[in-house]
Image 1 (cartoon, rainbow, N blue to C red):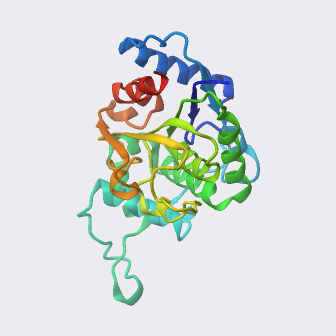
Image 2 (cartoon, helix red, strand yellow):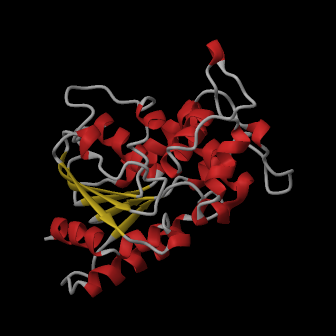
Length: 281
């Protein structure tokens, strides 16, 4: 059993539960030590690790296959997410004059949208194929029912009677939000979302949540703190309060430009550790 449960985002398919525990706990302890929290050296941590489930089934191209190309992006969620990210980066980018859309509306090509993202250091470091891979991994969570159930099952299994706080990064914040609504009996003090895409329209439309109060604070949670780096375009909407109600406490922070979405920088951030520390008591 553990006081803190951590839920990772994408990119952990070839890692392990022990590696996540080592990385996340070290970052959290660093932040808690920086803030002189009395439990910094003794706090307990449980990894809700689901990365290995991404190794089941087809799920996309492997490392030995050709790189992703714009033509690999599927209509619907994948193109919607790509366009949403590009609009956040460059909202006045306009339409692609080469591609007339339905009823004469001009639309932008996937390549143009990728070019917009590649102009941002974080996305540029991923490359076009890396951006498409990221989008497809998020899409798989929403389209693969077995994967989605396994991820949420892992989160639910990690939460025990002594869990005080869940810290959920990136796609993990989506899984944590859905899981907490699915299991209202799994009561915790605080949910901390870091680098969360919960504000993105394409994500909000596909949340699997029912119940009075959604979108909003899950009934089993006393406090929700959302931390978003100003340079992090995965956390596209910095204020989740606008979408999920006044109970959300939003904080905008700064992370290194090329590592703006990195979980370890978020975990060490003062806003994150103070929310965690308050839940620990």
